Image (cartoon, rainbow, N blue to C red; front, side, top):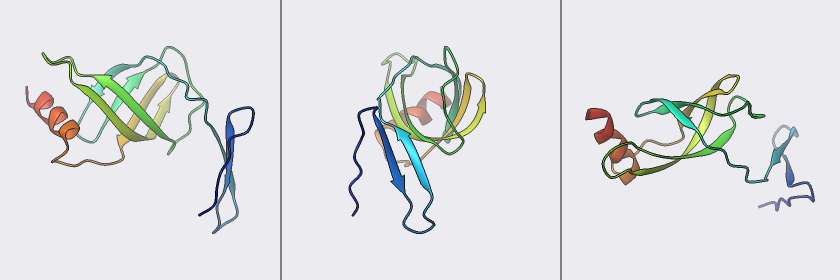
Length: 111
């Protein structure tokens, strides 16, 4: 396994061993409040205060609370599927019917 190091600008560059293409990823850990516009079992659409430098198929972690009585915390790995300025549509990287997070989303959607 190849080690990847983050430089002084919080960026990491990875080289694909198969095709040789490189990709630089920002590792700054930047966070911003989101507004969830639409939620489904397979993904969600959310709004940011301003546009971010995201690309289609970027993997990002989304964290939010459902507005149910328990204010259930949802934290999911997602892939960016559509970008319209500050409105982003993502697909969950996994959907497991037995996971507590996915169960919470399912019950929330049935309510």
